[in-house]
Amino acid sequence: MTEKLQKTAITPATHTAPPAKFSHGVKKGNILQVAGQVG
Image (cartoon, rainbow, N blue to C red):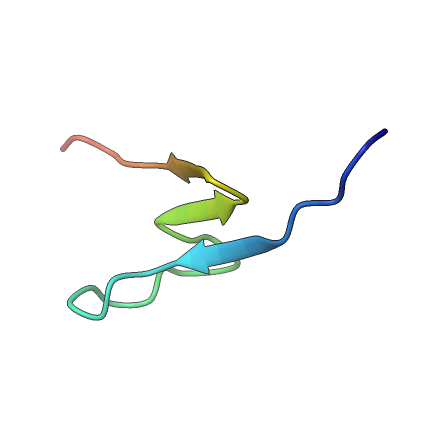
């Protein structure tokens, strides 16, 4: 069976909100997916 996992966007309070519909990370069930960029 396929179970639908709830997605939660993660944006730390110490960071500004990202432009457009991006987030710093997404939590799906017990999995945390993060994104980043090195300057």
